[in-house]
Every structure is written in structure tokens, then in C-alpha cells.
Length: 500
Image 1 (cartoon, rainbow, N blue to C red):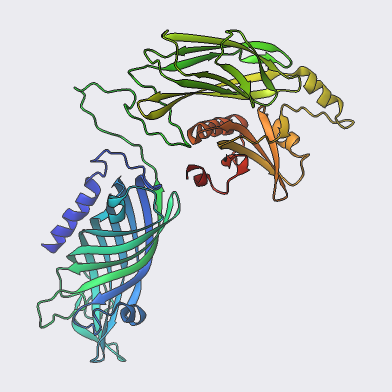
Image 2: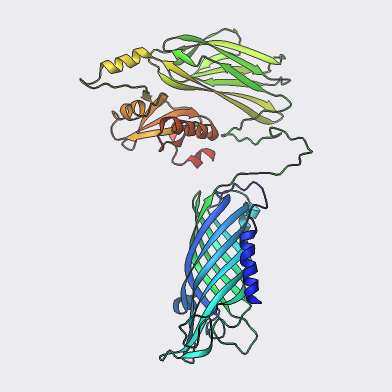
């Protein structure tokens, strides 16, 4: 009967899929599947044990090595299911000069609960957890006399010599665990756990006790858990019309979220030539579809260094150019559904490469501030600058520089950039970044702790910086590029400091 139960449980472990719930589970770097390896000390509780409830004495005197491997599926920030394979050895010496030794292997299914994440769903490095489940295990045990090693019958899983293996014995178990998880990295956690297995057998130690209490065993382990983020999937009713955008997107003071309200249908079209010759004056055409919105609003376009807003073709009193920003400010937007604004922009002769012109429109919806972001990337063609750089190259060496390296210019508020290089000498950047990797963007240079550090791009939101970094790595092949954050021109030690 026990053998059949083990076979049924093993079959169910491989048959039951973990994808039976589809929900959003991207929390604290945990999502989708996780894999965990947990080595530790295996201890026995039963008729031969003299210190059943003294964990520390048991680990010091009566423990053997055990190891487990788990596959975990995270369904909620606080709830997960896990399949576990466990194997190890058992040992215990009794007061009557006898001892037993055994080995076992277990397969189990269990659920896991992180109580703190049930109360407050935010990033936590340290979190206790509980788990409970059901399992089946096979074991072999032999009891011997201390000193002579004489086999004392009965034994289980061996023949009378205590060495030759016979059929394995099976039993059921109930794994109960308590643990503490520490998040080392977004995808890596360190977990300390003590797990007790209650069983339905009293024969682990080859000795049936006088009281009706079954044997148990436990594992105290420290494990590494590697997480693979999963996709957030939310089930919807196909009979109910679905909105393409949220009705009330969440915004913060330092990190705005792109919002397009269905009642206003507000969006912006910015027309600028994709390729511009250095030294040229071009026309920028802004077309704002505001729908029925008529409240206060402010449009800001941040121009790169070397770009200047020189002339308002619309001749509006709301237009201004200050601190590299083109600003159009309305106390109340015009009644027209579509508004157009045109102005002229001059590009200095020392500009070259790809440049990003970022823009945003801030407006009010009830008591909340809303933002629509829009960006435009242009390429500055500067053959004159390229010719000058080739002319000053060393004899017999041609420098083909497509970069434009300038000292970093601080901005007010929170700013995100992508660092693409760091060198001890500042003469390495042009060769390594511009020529070798074809970096055409404006490259900002700053000196930090004796290093010349180089960044590209400038963004007000982290999401924009992430998209730009991914495209930058794909185009240039600089796999080490990463995002850095600034506050009022001062570089922050950690990205997370930008969100405080």
C-alpha cells in the first residue's frame, strides 16, 4: 500500500502543472519560476533519540548531511507553490550501546506563505516565511551494536548482513518549515530554514517504540534561491469592453507616468527633420491634440547643449526660451481641439552625432498633476568637424571620430543618464567610444574619484532611460552600459535614491 502511495505522489508531482493561476507576480525581484539548492544538517527524532527537542545538541551530536533541490512558482508576492526533492542520511546512538544508520530520499509538494508581504506589498530585503505540504519518501535503515557492529534485527532495506541492499521501504511525510529569506540581489536570495518532517512510520530507526508515536526527521539548511522573472498576465472577461489605458494612473512628484486620459485623448506630435546640418536654423512644429481639455498646462522641451530656440513663429505670449528649455505656459488652454505652435531652433557649428530632444506636457485633472512625455532623436551631420579631427591625427594614423564629448552639464531635479565608459585618462574616450563603438550621441564627461566617466542621454523618468539603454546596447555593442541617477547635477550613489 505504501509503495503504491509513493508511486501515485511521484506521478502527481510531474503531472500537476504550476501554471494553473495567471496573475501579476512581479514583486521584490521574485516572479515566475525560482530554483533553490539547500544543503544542511539532517537530524532524527524517535525512539532512540535522547534529546528530541534540543535542536542545537542534536545538530552537534546526531546530525548527518542532507541536501534538497526545489522548483518554486510565485503566484502572489506572499504566496508560492514548490516541488522539492530531498536526500540525506540519518544517524543516532542510544544509551544501551546501540546505534542506527539510514538513508532516505523524499519527493514533496508544498505551499509557501510570506506573511509580511501579505500585510505590505513593497520591496523587503528580509522576510520570514512558512511552508507546509505532503510528501513521500523511501528509506533504508540498519541497527547495530556499538563496538562489534553486530546487526540487530529487524532492519529495513538491507538483508541480514546489514550491507546487501534489498527492497526500499516507503512512507508518507508532512513537511513543515519556517525560514528567513534575505534578498542579496534582485534575482538571488539567501534563505535560512528549519524543516520538520512528520511521518506515518515508526520504523526509521528499526525499533518500534512502546508508545504510539511515529518517527520524524528534520533538516536545518542554508540555501540559495535563483529567480527567473515571469510575465504578468491578468485574466479578463472577453464580454466586457477593456480600456486601453488606466483611468487613474499613479503619479509621484519625482517620477511621472505617461498618461493619456480617454476623456481628453491628449497627445503631441513633434515634427523635426531627422537629419540636420550643423550651423543650420530649422523649424520645429508642435501639434497638440487636447480634445475637450481647457485647463492650465505647461509644455517644456529640453534642448541639448548647442541648441537654441531663437524665434517664435506663432508669436504667442506663452512662449519662452530659458536654461536650454523651450517653455509654452497656459493659464487656460485655447478652446480649439488641436493647437499648433511653430518656432525656429538653431544648431551650433560644433555639434555632431545623435541628439535627443525630450519634451513633456504637464496639466491638471481634478487635483492630480498629469504628464505626457514625447521625445525626438535627430542626427547632426557635421562634415567640417570630422575633417578637422582627421587633420589633427598623428602622422600615419587616421582618427575617425563620430562622437561629441563635452563636460557634463548639471540639470535641476532628478535626471537619469546611461554610463557607457570610464577611463583613467581622458584621451581614451574618443577612440574607445566614438570610433570603436560608433557612439554618435552627445557624450558628457565628468571626473569622479580620479576616473573620467562618460554618459549619454538625459531623461526625467527611469522607464525612458531603460528603453534608451537597451537600444544603445543593441546598436553599439557596449554591454557594460548602465543607468546612473543625478539630483540637481549631483550623482547619486544608488538608483533607488532617485525615488525617495
